[in-house]
Image (tube, rainbow, N blue to C red):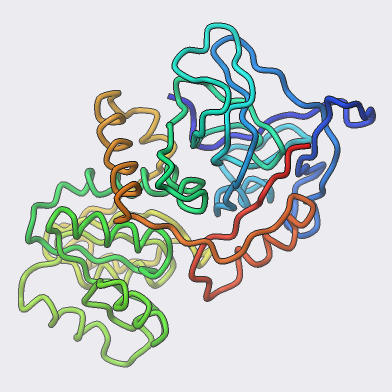
Length: 348
């Protein structure tokens, strides 16, 4: 399986022809608002087994911004075009690419250079998207939702058991709540602020605990009526990881899924020893590389089905053109968002 995180090397920016397109380019690593520029680059041609897709919408993910800053596990050669997920329409089909036709609407993740008018991808990784799924959902349907589904599978929890997740009003937290609800797994959602509590409760998720309120940990422990919280999903790191560990039952597992605080894990040694707890990481890119093909088809089919029947809707807060990618990146990292920030391409 292709990697979830990718970025493509770009050459030949100095010549403009009818075959050129617009793309977002980084010539150096740094703060996205400072290094993202719209440039004219050659339109790529599909090779064997590839298709070229005319980009409609592409989301800005946290890992995209980490790559742009040069702080992710993968550091591309420069200049480069970011973007790892998109929805669009097949524009050209390379030799030996089967199962797709020009004009077909598809979504893809793990792609190269999605922040452009066109991008290339392996035909066998394209996911046809029904007309009932809007672009706003389709453009972010695969990467984070698939990671959330794989994560939930890896937790090995049974219907009726409790898990806890912090930063629960973010995209992953909402997805974990939705998928857990589908499986009968109970979730204690930790958020910061009354507005975030209301936002999750309005979606039908709960119990939701405001971790800014004094005595929140006792409240979180009480809402399960004495039933153990067997897994914790930490997206914040820093002291928040230790706070989440404090809620876990003996022999519980704390899964590190992110580090929104930018801090290392801060966990009491005694909590790990005396609870005989396990702390482990989850990296969607590596997990997706190892997934069994049958499991991949099963999970993708579940995602598309949930999106097609309206159960899964992924919101977009704001849309920007490729020439305003820097502004879009700033908004993407602004606290309080209730939807994804996306880039809209306009193939010429």
